[in-house]
Amino acid sequence: MPGGTSLLNDNPDGYTLSRLRLDFGVKPISGLRFFLQAQDARTEGYQTAPAPATLYDPIDLRQAYVEWSSNGPMTMRLRAGRQELLFGGERLIGSAEWGMSRTFDALDFSLSWGRTRLDLLAGSAVQIDATRLDRHKPGEHFYGAYSAVKDIVPGVNLEPYLLFKQNLKIKSESGLPGDALLLSPGVRITGRTRGRFDYTGEFLLQRGSYATDDISAGAASVVVGWQVSNSSSKPRLSAEYNYASGDSAAKDGARNTFDQFYPSNHSYYGMIDQFGWKNMKNYRAGFDFVAFQKLKVRADFNEFYLATTQDALYNSSGSAIVVNRSAASARIGSELNAVALYQCTKIWRVGAGMGHLYPGGFLKQSKYAFGYTYPYVMLAGSF
Image (cartoon, rainbow, N blue to C red):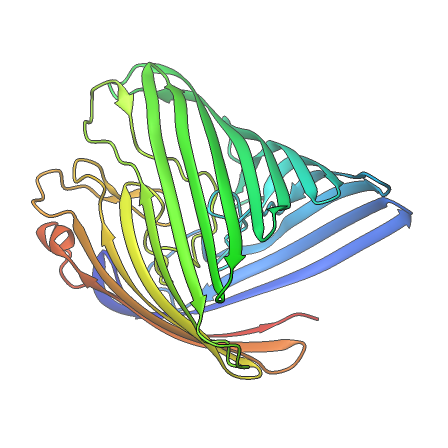
């Protein structure tokens, strides 16, 4: 049951969300599997009608795929159809589980040998549509190769990847028609060191063409954590910096806004899910611990800035929500969050959280000085 005010609307709001999933799987022979998943998502009490597609989609087909696998010195798996795709930290390709969640009409061919895995991908993201059966977005396709090597040196995991995105029948900054092809090479590194330190880094560039415009963008993310002690509460401090480029000129024939692809942003850039990995600088400090055996608690503090005020402020889905090129300040604001999750039984889990965004100069100068408050409680069960 979320509630509170909106980033772009200071009217208080409270509503309930429900989501039911039913799974059906069959393995007729060894190595062959068929899987179906239906989902029914509804909302009650939302202040506007109809509710957005991120909240409301009555009974629909969320997953439907066939999977073939073969084990041996090299394991092979081919999955074809509507499915979840989860790679790395899900900053670029993930299910975005908090909310409606995302699936893809895709092919995923996976090879695994030793400590190495390679996935070859091709597909399109599925669009939620409450008025008909969900289908993928026309004219938008992605392709990629995602690899992962565990312990490439002791304690270090390496994930190099190359992603492509194709958009048909789009327009350049000056309005000229054409197609787009985005090339995005990147690498993700994770590891642990002595003294109970851990780290994650992700770095990528984007090049290509968008109709007659040239694409030149990039992003980076660095997280450093420290488990304070080996006690059962596992107290951990963390610090994080996220950057994604923006476009400082609207009609210069160059597109510099980073494309975040299809991410799961809920664990990143503030837990109240207001911002995406586009035209942003984000500084975060966090603390989490296990209060007792089944209760996990997390709190963090975020500072948000635009990479450039000449570009927009983007929401978690990547859409522009505030444009104010005359703003003197790039500071979006500060966000404080706290959340607790309790595993009641093997089936049931409850949680509650609260987040508040304190507006900075950019939002105040854009006439959104009221901030944003988001309290929620949740109950989830898996049978």
